[in-house]
Image (cartoon, rainbow, N blue to C red; front, side, top):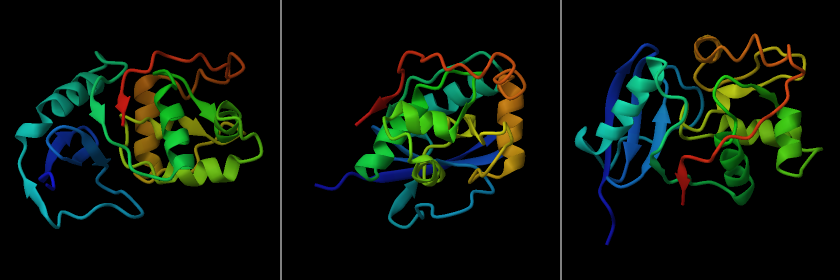
Length: 180
């Protein structure tokens, strides 16, 4: 039996975010100017009720009252992508790391480019915080939601300007999102 898939739009300071899921798990969250492949609404029902907790937690995040998410996620990707995305969830609020540091964290120190590619395919923006990964020089690089959105998110978290002042040390956070 196939589960029904749902979608809705949430109004946020970044514009309308498209959220999608199956009523139990969040599967996709895209910013308004998302570049690259996204799942279409074909076969999905527009229905906001399954996304009440997502909307509430995002509102708390945008208000600065939430620093981590506690939502059931279903990430679909290659084993390598899943490994990268699970590590993204561990990057604490207000912290940035480089693609190289992320590659080292998954024990693939020479795979910075592959990590960047997996990062760009993250289907659950903000909650799986791919915006917290920056270039080795500290510059903002690539973001499927656009660099303005990435800058806004990092400024909101106050992580961009402080991450390199202390050497960019990475302190893992408690894994709060479920991945299945």
